[in-house]
View 1: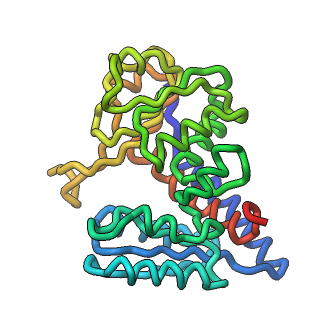
View 2 (view 1 turned 30 degrees about the vertical axis):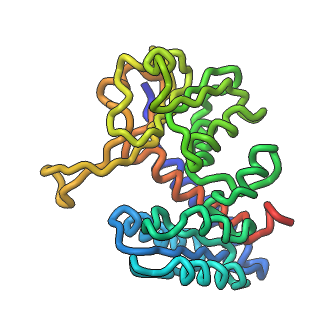
Length: 291
């Protein structure tokens, strides 16, 4: 069993991005600028956005943080999105999800200019990705594919089972894995899938993205499989200073001995999601997607 070290790969990618940014600045180019919009004080979102700001500093990006309280109106938020769309200094921006219940997430996503949609959530970017056009690919699916590629995991002709069908991870990842670059035969499973354990055991590459802590047990994984754990659920813990710890969707101690490769939680997919956002922002700043 080999551990797929997302921290290590993300650090390598950061160095690569930083070198490109330094060269861009040397040539008189514009410093890439990423903005984040944060509504409320959700603990997970606060932590994630703080990391994004540090990541920007590490690679030489400019970063901006726009904060709103939970009671911001949808109209006020959409007005800010429009302002960011029209700010020529900002190359890309994200609106951190989840949003309060009184705000329509999809309406906000669709209001973002696709050319600045570095989260890759806008229907235009998803559609472009589906038909193989240049697009901003959602950060987590892109990060997963990059991990597999950098660990030389063979994907061509393999059976890939993805447990989870969200528009952020499961669905876009299923498209990426089935495209010619990866050549997998893909099955998307979910909570209503019959014979789920049997289906998971058929996977050469098993991706757990269902959002249920330790859902995938040892009896659901065949010997020699590659397992990618996307889960990041906070659970209470009296063994940490914070009072909580992250749990993945895979029962690691049971599953790991059966795998050829496996991603840990934390330190697997999470760091790749963050660095993939930097990757997309650099693409936006250098007009690599929409020309």
